[in-house]
Amino acid sequence: MQQKTTTACTECHEARIILQQRLSKAAWTKEVDKMIKWGAVVDANDHDALIDYLSTNFSVDQPPYQPPRSAPVANNKPSSK
Image (tube, rainbow, N blue to C red; front, side):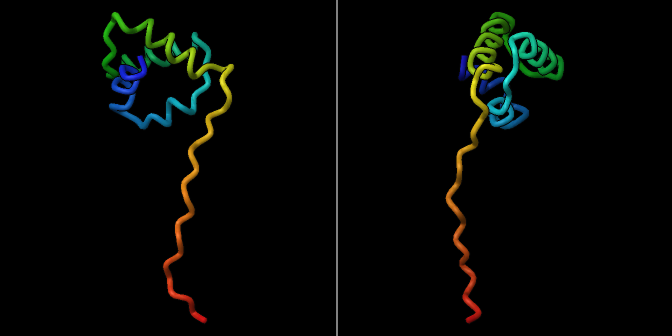
């Protein structure tokens, strides 16, 4: 279901939008149904499994999303000393 979720959801927005969510099963159901109305392509046979996947992996019981830290950008400007 991870691949199907990625395919369906990242057509319109970044995966980070999903990763940041911590929703109940009822809230994920409402969200998925809303996205389908807005054009997300989700096979009817995958609807319930998609909601199960999201509500298991991105539930209110999961720890908050921690974005990956990027390395600091080096300052390549010449020193004015």
